Amino acid sequence: QVQLVESGGGLVQAGGSLRLSCAASGTIFSINLMGWYRQAPGKQRELVAYITNGGSTNYADSVKGRFTISRDNAKNTVYLQMNSLKLEDTAVYYCQARNVRDYWGQGTQVTVSS
Image (cartoon, rainbow, N blue to C red; front, side):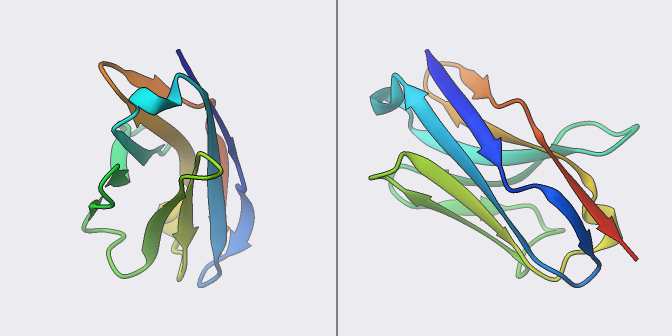
């Protein structure tokens, strides 16, 4: 089992920045990928970014150049640095970890205001 705890969400003005954190615990040696998803009201959950054990990253087109995913293996933590935030980035952000199945955090709200 893997447990994920997110933090760092909040209210920010458009153009501002936030950093999300996701701390993993449990059977973490088996994790081969960690990522961030988001879900806005009335919309499906969508991939934001992921990072593999090898350090490869992938981003949704909508966040390329603005968001950066990184991980600190010593702290078993993955981060999402979000810059130049837009109104459409408003959503609940979920941390994901994958081994033979997906694990999810409880979600953290990000609200971007004008």
